[in-house]
Image 1 (cartoon, rainbow, N blue to C red):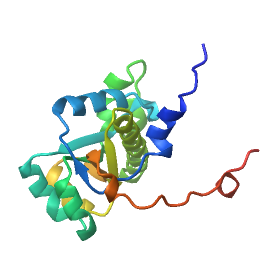
Image 2: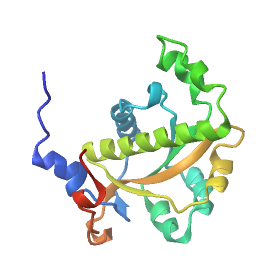
Image 3: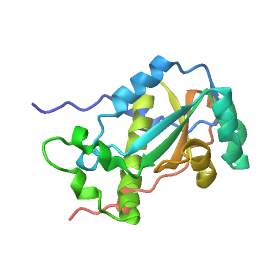
Length: 197
């Protein structure tokens, strides 16, 4: 049975009226973070590999580790955000494939690939999962402030030392302050970036 289209208000909340916020208020509970993951985890990835790993930075101790890794323009707003999500990827993602893709030996498709090949796969799919996180957060009533602008190597040393996990990007979460957004920037039109063949 075909799905019906989302109504205009849902599309506004997810896309058309959604914005990148630079200041947030409120708390984001453990329950909200669990609910967020439980929605976004169903987004598709290559061979259901799910290479993204998420660190929800909320405590003073975790923020103290994150702070020095941030570019100056991102520091204050990130330290003030209720939660900052480190969206990362695991280069050993294939170790989970016996559980995630159990009907065949999918682990063997990846475990002999080079570091460069694994990085391409894991970075691509963790970026997808990070986008699912943004949409899930908006769908659940949270606002987002996704960003790069940090020292990946320093962050990885602080949060992922001794592992094959690497950082991708960050997302501040909370209830956005409308005064913190910039005017909506233009987007490219269909004919500028698309073609139908």
